[in-house]
Image (cartoon, rainbow, N blue to C red; front, side, top):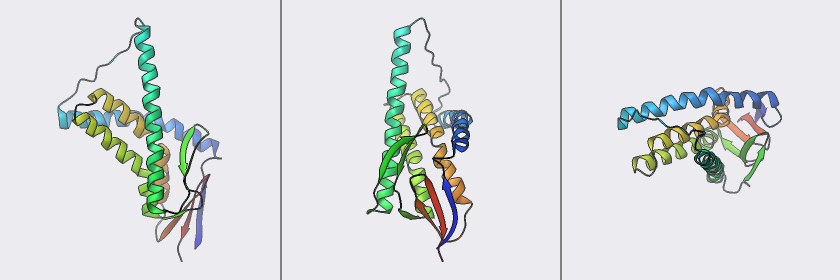
Length: 189
């Protein structure tokens, strides 16, 4: 194997800062995307919602609900990564953590084909978005709930999208080693 690049995300404070800043435009992009999706497929265009400070208890309940729901989405997101790590390397050890403002799942020193690693990266985005769409289609959540939480989750996938972007720049028979700090990319000989 020939080492192509070692990516160390966890110790790169500048990159982490810029990825966190990218969440804001990504959130707005996904708001537009999922609102358009709802309009095209469901004819829904009214997403009015407000929480006034005149109803402090309602505001506090909404705020607490947001943090609980977002926490659940983050946990599900990382568990999905863990399931896919195991799917592609059943013997690999998966661990979870929180560092530098980021939740993460890792399978240190496990090797994956490039396409498998891309699937590991994108699986939470695909499954959580599809799950929220299904809940909305079944009438279990509102269109507003879907657009807001699908958008905030999708924007929070910025690190996963970044890994996919980096991997897309490498061609050939690529092998990816997951590390506790990022990933190492090799070209198979």
